[in-house]
Image 1 (tube, one colour):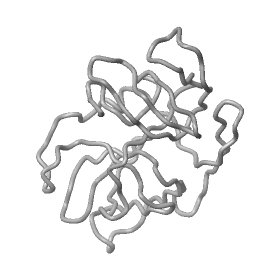
Image 2 (image 1 turned 135 degrees about the vertical axis):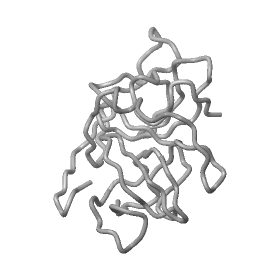
Image 3 (image 1 turned 120 degrees about the vertical axis):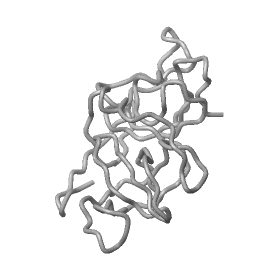
Image 4 (image 1 turned 90 degrees about the vertical axis):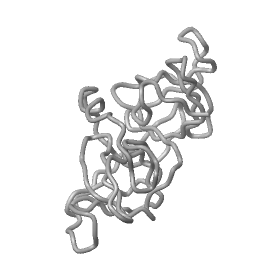
Length: 181
């Protein structure tokens, strides 16, 4: 993603497989946990909720409309975002860095994605710490959430052709007690 035409692009490694991706910066858990109350939305879906970017290039605007200036241009399809408000066809979102702005609904997807935060994380075969490792995931790797049982601190994910389990605290893109089926 870049701000006012400044681009930050990095290489992401999944185990021994290199994948090109776009950079996002880690934030503290306290920023992630802010503003988690459920509010009604014009779509009837609860707020806040997670979604992801639908296109390779998505503008983040200062306000809900094309007359507002573009503050950021995301160049990362499937980047997870938290939808925190709605106004007509516009959604106010927050990214993993805590940056907020408005994106047109056509540029957002309900597809549930995640991004690795902190240091390198281990993708495991089963939902337990002693399970064999499948891959090592570096910071900013983006993958898809497949299932997150309510009673578990783990989620089943898919990333770079690998399927396995990650602890919820290892990534951004799901709430602590959220269930994904």
